[in-house]
Amino acid sequence: MKILFIDDDKAPIRYYLEELKDAGFDVTHCRNPDEALDALEEEGCVFGLIILDSAMPPGKRYADSNTEEGLTTGNFLFRDIRERCPDTPILILTNFAGLDWIRKASECSNVCEVRKLDVMPFELVERVRQMIK
Amino acid sequence: MSEGGSEKAPDDPLGSAYQALKGDDPLIQNVKQHIWRRLWVRDNVEAWITSTDLPALSKYLHRALPQGDVELLEEIKMVAEKFSNSPHAFFIIGLVNERLERCHSMNVDLVNQQSTVTSSSFASSEVLKMRQTAAKTRENYNGQLCAGVKRFGGDWLAGTPDLPGETTLLPPKTHCQLEVWMQPERPDGAWSDKLLIETGREEDWVNFSFEVDCATLHFPYGRKSLRFHRRKKSDSVIFDFVTPKNKGEHLLYVHAFQDPALVKSLLVILKVAAPGHGIAPH
Image 1 (tube, rainbow over the protein chains, first blue to last red):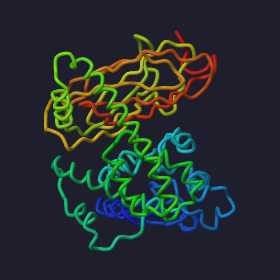
Image 2 (image 1 turned 90 degrees about the horizontal axis):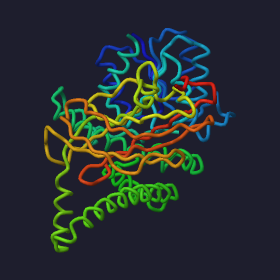
Image 3 (image 1 turned 90 degrees about the vertical axis):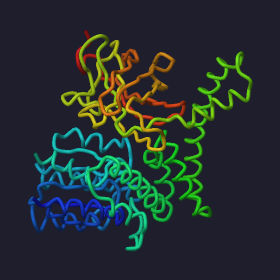
C-alpha cells in the first residue's frame, strides 16, 4: 500500500519512515505542502493513507496564508487534501495537544491524531494498520 | 517550521542506541521508549529555539510541553539552557520552570499533609527520613491514564468508541461522574495520556492517587486512590460534577500522583451542549 508522509522533520521522523518501509508500505515522503500537493496532483488519490505533520513551513502554496509561522500549515494542507481526496484516511502527526483544528478534523471517521512524543515508530505502524483495516 | 531538528550524523549515539534495540521484549520496549522521548526533546527543543518565530511559539508551546512529567521537563530545560542567549530559550526555560514549580508545590503540599499527621510522634529528622524514603519507593508503570464521563449512576456520556470524549457534547444541567482509571493499552474513545515510570521499583501491584483540577466546574476536593495489577485495567475512581446550563468548553486536569509525586496530568476538555442539544438529560 502507498502512504504519503508529509513532514519537514528530519530526525527522528526517519525512524518512522524506516519502520513503515520495513512493514512493507510504499512510502512517499514530502517535506513541504508544495511537494505534497504536487504529488497528489501528479498521482491522484492513489495513496491508501496520508500522514500529515501539523506544523511545517508554508511553502509557496500557503505563503500568503496566515499559518502563524508554519505552526498551522497542517490545517490548510488538511483542507486541501480532503477536497482532493475526501475518502483517503489521514493520520495527523503532531507535537501539540488540544489544537482546535485537529480536534475538528478528528471528528471525521477516517481521521485520527497521534502525538509524536507518545508514539514510537512501531506503534505508528500499528495505528496505520488499524486505520486502513 | 520544522517540528524536529536538524539531520543527525550517522554517529548520533542516542539515535544509534534506539535503532540497535530490537525485539518485542517489554524491557527493550521500555528502554526504547525512554530513548524515544529523549530524541523528541533533543530535536524539538533545538528546532523551537532555532527556527520558530517567538510570538507563534509562545502561542503554541504550552500545548507541546508535557504537564506533569518532571523528568521530561528537566530534560527540556537542560537542552534549552545550551542556548541560553536566545530569547526563545529564555521563554522555554521560563515556561518549564512554571510547570516544575507547579509539580513541586503540589508535592510539597502532600508531604506537608503527611508531616502534619506524623509531627506529633516523629522527630523532624524522622519526618525527613520518611520524605527521602518516599522518593525512593516509586513503582514502575507503563500504561495509560484514562478518563470518561458517565451519567450519575448510569450509562456512558463520553469516552467510549461510540461517544468519543474529544467530540461528544455533554447534556447541560446534568449530574455526571468523571471516571478515572489506568490500563496498559490506549483506550478507544476515552481521554487518555501515556504514563511511564521507569526509575522506580518493579512491582506487580502499583498504587496511584488522583485529583481533579478545573477552574470552571466544581469538583469535590480531595484525592482518591487505586491499587491494581499494573498489567491489567484498574478499577475506577469517580468524581461527581454537574454540567452547567450553558453551552461551552471546560478544561480540566486529572492529576495522577505516586509517592507523593505528581507523575502525570491528563488534559480533558469537556464540551457541554446548548440547552436542548447533546445527549438528552434524564
